[in-house]
Image 1 (tube, one colour):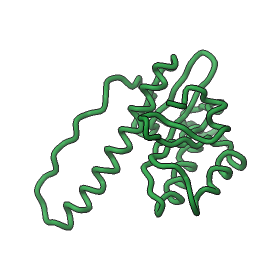
Image 2 (tube, rainbow, N blue to C red; image 1 turned 120 degrees about the horizontal axis):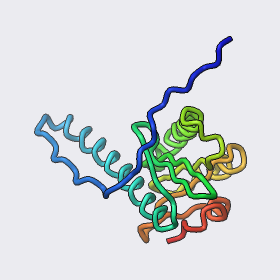
Image 3 (cartoon, helix red, strand yellow; image 1 turned 60 degrees about the vertical axis):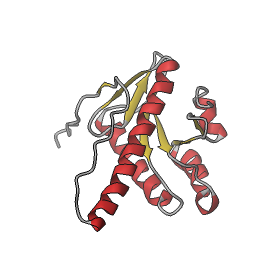
Length: 168
């Protein structure tokens, strides 16, 4: 059997800052409600990307992305592949499941087997979904982090140990 080829868009440097949101086009109320939710999630997602990229640049990493990869960061000694997810208590399990599969897929497609996989969440995994932190770290080897109120990111001890630049 012939070896499979990996076809993935090249990662390109991430430069600039968060784009200004576009105004919503007028439409019926139900459509606007759905559109507002989508726009809020999209905007939150991009804010996570650009906030993390800024922290990484300050820590000496070069950042890149493509149409699939939210954020890739590399230094002379380490590589990180990030998947950003906006989340609520009700959708955290689904969002983390999506992020896990995306990270494995992108790591393979981009041929980044040594990159540390990181899920960046808008909110911490607490309450009935707190078990997911240990699942990600212990069972999957994926580091979870989440935005904090200081404009930075934090996570469990395993994440902070690998990414000491996390605490804001």
